[in-house]
Length: 193
Image 1 (cartoon, rainbow, N blue to C red):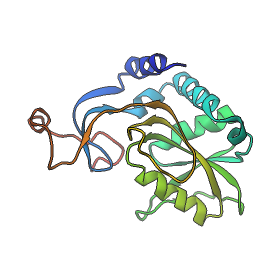
Image 2: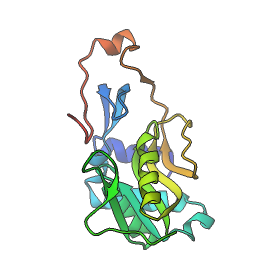
Image 3: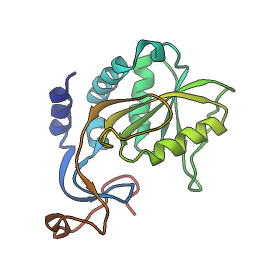
């Protein structure tokens, strides 16, 4: 899939939104990708995951032993990446505000992990998830994501492979452009509280 094909998938799912959005990082944006909508069609989710898996460098793909994703946003794409790679997939949760493996999920010491996210903006959640995997005994060897919103600024300490890189401007809440400040802000993601 090329970039136009991928964006077509988002548009077909009505997952490319415009307005005033509060991102999970706290930053603001006039555009938002609702990955849950693009992933609600199992065939579309499978196509996107297969395309993302194909972008992983061969040397990384051959080393991965398990896929781990942070809940909530990464669960579906992580599961589909596991399917595309023929590997088990598990997820991290934040029952007390910090990521951890639960539900009987565990990693063997040194087990090589592909971290999979839906959207990465600042990388904060990714870095927290990587620490949780390390605490559980695993070793994250790469991260893959449907969308990189960082503008290429992400530094996770491991190779990062996005399916799509978008450079939507993001703003601090106290430094909004006039036209964005005039629109009521909504928090559309999984942590909308």
